[in-house]
Image 1 (cartoon, rainbow, N blue to C red):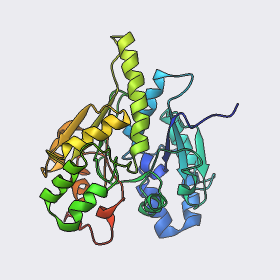
Image 2 (image 1 turned 60 degrees about the vertical axis):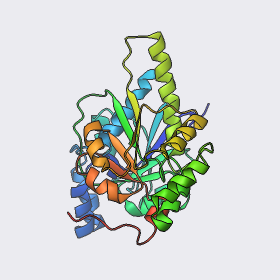
Image 3 (image 1 turned 180 degrees about the horizontal axis):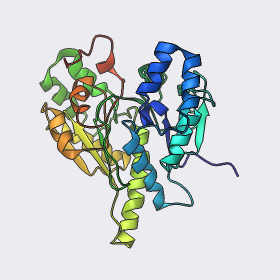
Image 4 (image 1 turned 90 degrees about the horizontal axis):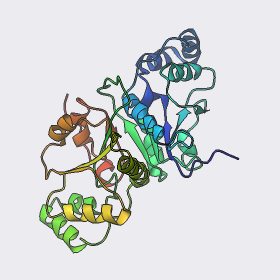
Length: 317
């Protein structure tokens, strides 16, 4: 029987999200492909350092302990390397004891072409162009931003935080505010549609798959009081009352329970995130991510009206 992916949470992962490839990339950019190939062969047994998404992936894979004979999570490497130069990545995966056995080596090919065929619910890469092309094609993808690489000495609790508009939900409501900057008009729009769930955003399927695992954990907890829940899901949004109500309406309609929700109404998200310390945070606005990436792993979802040309001005460093 073929190995089925449809019932699992499948993550597509570029090596640039999993490991720190700064040194390797510098060789490729400054010395060219032949030097890069020679460098990777020479360093094949040299362990790569963890990257920004390393702790998130390791802890996500630990959820397979809930169903060891039928894994809930599958991580597939989607690499722009060829099989030869990709050997160092696979060797490092093995040495870190990460349960990643499936890989596509594309020799510079576009990884986003394989997102749909492999039922991938989230593609992570540090390559901005690959992520943008995936989003434009309607695929769930995020750019892992350079920043903090958290320590990860165990495979305990996994904390995942999401923005709402433009990430979990589409950007229809956000477009109302973006069009004229009137908060009252935004709240009126949301109140008018208070009982209408939002349409799904780029990471809706990813969240729904996480929710399935969350329910499995809750079932395990009910039968085994000694079990310690691993997965915690939070929403951290710039919405505040009364627009918070439609967020809850949407989660109820989708059958999803959120552990924590922060309706901040313009308060800087970093202040909450720094205390919450998620292993990964997803947002569609670089305005929020630039500050947060200095203290925790962040992923930019380049979707919707907030990411149209000219919509973002980076913070000064």
